[in-house]
Length: 278
Ligand SMILES: [Zn+2]
Image (cartoon, rainbow, N blue to C red; front, side):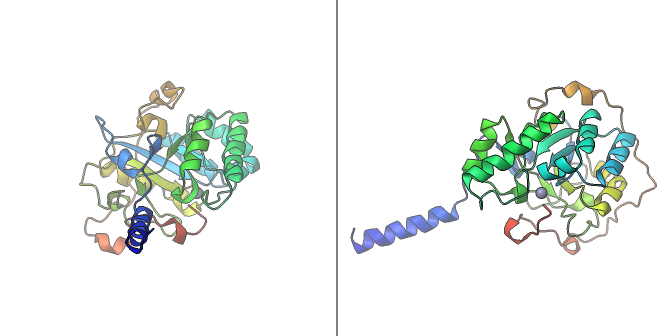
């Protein structure tokens, strides 16, 4: 190879590394969540990393509101709190797979990655859940993750709006930036919202989360399976029969004057800089 060809090859190689991996058809990312065609503004409350000792209180409140949620459970936590997993299932919420020990799936071997997902699926299934979705920790995955998920009948699902609740509670849930880096126009809010039920502050903030998202345009809260069209939910009828929620209006309303720049919300997820919580 002459000098020019070698140089060209290096440049092409560099450029290829800058181009993000193509999104597989069976990966639901922020863009596909936000642009999904729907007749109303569906919203999903998704809680990662549990179950935790705070989850029962969250379930109590969700039950009072009549709102289904989707829990992306960590296998190790599910093993510690099997009764909470059973309760999540019995109360009509959706359970997803969030790996066994919450690793960065791109930094462990292929065998370990498969074990992380498969072992969690086995446990969740033994507890009555029927996982249809895998949310890789930190939102980090590769083609092998997708292949493992596929082999277990799972779709990789990320989120469209990250509350960053592990860092601090946002000043307003209505003005969180979505996956396109913008705030939804008033009345247009929809998508899959990321929270963590391992944080007591998040669980205690559920009334404000629900109230502010309703006021921002969410017409109805559904599970991930319902949001994606119901194909992944084997029994969507369970949730469709839920009564309409009654949202208390006594919670503090978001201030319309809150400058977006003060919310300190990152536009793009940067998993390598985030601590273990996500
Ligand atoms: Zn997580």
